[in-house]
Length: 149
Image (cartoon, rainbow, N blue to C red; front, side, top):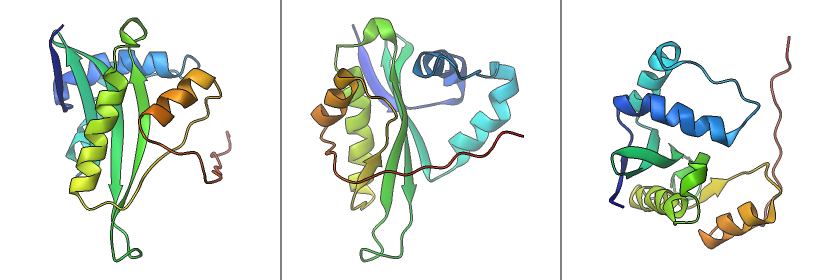
């Protein structure tokens, strides 16, 4: 198994959409041709990085890092991680942890004072995974979603 940690490239779109299908079974994902413009905007956004673990030429784990400029904390930015997923058949090999560690490294290099992650998962194994990556439960999270029309 040859592992490469890297940032996503335009050709990763179909593979990442397949990964995202495993992230949220109820989420209807677009076809690659319908998502190309959004994907290009993600890749062009200097605040967003999609980290990828590639094994044998295929993206098998990913996470998205967003670094946000900030006027508090001595103007130190903060970061958020979203869309963490590893291909089901590749779980348990440390690949998810490796992409999260790559995101941490980028955030720390950018001077971020913290990295946040919010999950809606309650599975103890998922929560233990995030804790094994270094995350600490501590704050209360709130969210609001756009109402459906």
